[in-house]
Image (cartoon, rainbow, N blue to C red; front, side, top):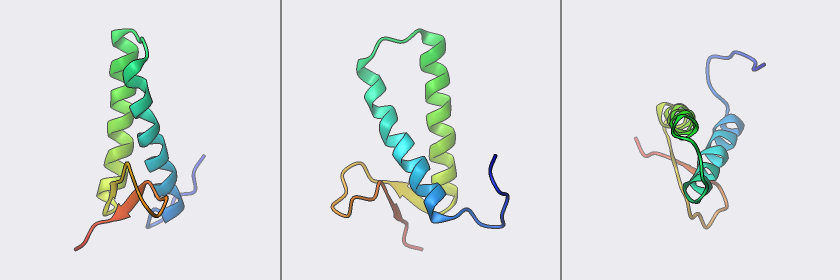
Length: 72
């Protein structure tokens, strides 16, 4: 269970970003259409959390972080 707050902390964003990056590994594995659809929905929900908090996914990062803050 998560702690509800006014703002999502950066550690939560980092964990969501790591999960989204991990979804890329599913493309070469066999899945049923239902499971593939559910996985894509989960990926899109995590991506939405990241993007609505002003971040974006970075797949190859020199800093090691799988996300970066968007310029305002």
